[in-house]
Length: 463
Image (tube, rainbow, N blue to C red):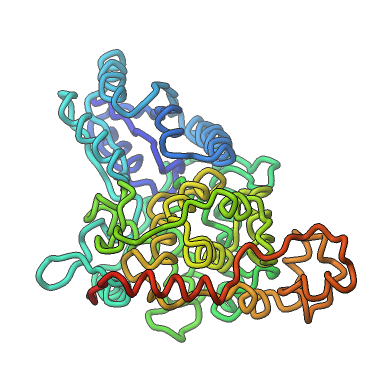
């Protein structure tokens, strides 16, 4: 008889979980048993900047996972140690006590997690089999003809789609007879059942309108699945299957219905593949080494105004107050506030990256780092350095009636739409006592300064 251990980490689901599937398969072949394990490392999580709201979300999803595993007679053991360096010894002790013959786990992307797994393999005298449950395509498998990783998204996307067409994809079934735990009552309900419910609802109609409506934060036009993808309650393959089920096909090119959202899933894969091939991305380093020479501002007053939503730029302030209260921010708004911090306030992208991780329920190192470096023009496929969002124009374009902005900035509720994104023009004449702040910077002047900063360094073209 074989005792197999499914080691859960960033994959808190029973459906389409390759590690759990292979553990059950091997145990069945050898008339063995399966146990499950989760190791909490609170100090490590704090070092990684994990938000309180995400820590609570993980705890609630662990409870849901426990209930689902119990429905098929699998016990979920929960262990605790401070950091990843203590995991190998703790895991070795557990395996000896429970006579474990083999461990199955899904790969993780960041370097600390990969170093932990390497140390586990070195310490244990039983096999650790790592599976691909994090991406559709295995990290490092989408490469150029010479075997090198793509540094730009568009050719990566083409190669990814070609590989998908060639090899397809498949889902790993949940354990026979398993029951998914019912969702709990929170703003972000826990459990696979809620994640799959949201995925199904999104694919009914919003998926079809995603390309035209996704940029407007006052509309319910995005999937809101990122918290579930971030900690593995939902897999990217399940997202592909839902698209295909809803449309009857998988869109493969720009302009096809549903492709805009599929493209976002490919961006997710791109950042994950990059983080494996270029581990320096896990070490606070820019993808473009020459941008390490950029000069950044250390203006603490500006940073405090940005984090608290008091910059005097309404779309930025509304977005930041939304983040502070809810732990989530619309993707268009993430780009706007990141551009503002790095290009208008000229504050280092690492500070924005860290702050987001400390607040987001969907905090994910690869996606967060990729997004911030894109906005700062230091990363792979970064926005050209001369692309600098005008916060007033962005507000006028993507929240033209102010539905989102006024929700989070009640002090501006009386300001007419015409003046909403330059409110002091109206407030100084009509409501001079209003406490909404003056803009902390002049956008035109800040833009010129940022252009000069980038022109002072050489940025080669990459492919």
